[in-house]
Length: 426
Image 1 (spheres, helix red, strand yellow):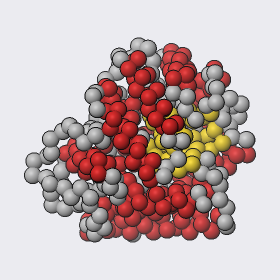
Image 2 (image 1 turned 90 degrees about the vertical axis):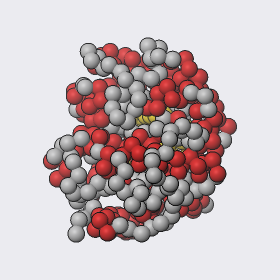
Image 3 (image 1 turned 180 degrees about the vertical axis):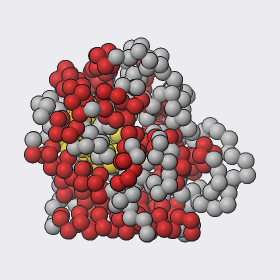
Image 4 (image 1 turned 120 degrees about the vertical axis):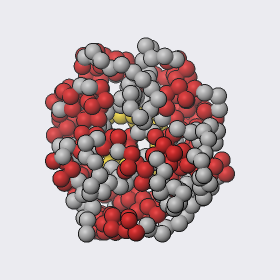
């Protein structure tokens, strides 16, 4: 039996952690939530409101392993809670406004689609949304810069109208990858130039968008890989970067923070908590292992011990299996493609429950679920879908989500998140 609390122990030795924040990608957004765009893959007529929980035989062992691991995690966290109830803002990623979509955001109807997405999240009762605005999108040299400024200024205004909190992740665009249409040449970019331009970008975000939280980097290894700048993926250099940015900003009411990844050494957070201008430690949780969950718990304790707040602004159950490629988890379409199937929904709900328990236990102020599309729909695993290539599979999933967003229909996972939020704000 595979033990999901050990699934990634050898993966660390295989260097899988280099890009384990892969779920930051926005591959699910090839089509807008407005329901427009894209032809259906030939021969596929998906059940858009799929709720089937039948586990395919080929996934039964993996499913059982993750189920056992999540039950173990839940037992530990609930046993430690003992009635504690911290005021947590439960949030979700506003995927329709993710900056990795690039110029798609500026097409007719896309802003309206993003607001429809926002309205549906509001109906679930979320108290905040997370938006990715990656470098260099919000810099004057980026094409159509002023249009992006206008787009995100309007998004921020709509978020505030609904009384929600806004978290902006000012990380790095996934340019030049299969997961974003954006092409950008980072060749010749020096660390000093990157720091200067990132500071300029982050100041513009504060000025134009005025988020409640500005996350200037929570996956140093991912940023280092995307930029081709390995030195940024070391604790000392990343801490110097975070110090430079956070101390150089005129923050206003915006809280500024950063974090190391749970799949990296705690040394990142140990460096960051000593920076006076860092207001919070940001945590991302994806791979499920005892080591990575322990890192998250210790990072939260470390932050609180140094008077810092804690936010968890990306989290989802990452469904890797033994035998999956460890050479480039950021490009592992096999793993990404698993999320779309409805039989995983009970595990996704159990994971969300554990994140709520972790937040209450460790006084996390803000928790954001990343793959919010699955609050609206999954698709069936059957002969029509199980062997689809990744892009076709994601297109089917997008169409399913778009239809249900239009209709105001939520998946069992979305309904569960709504109830979880309600239970935790009593």
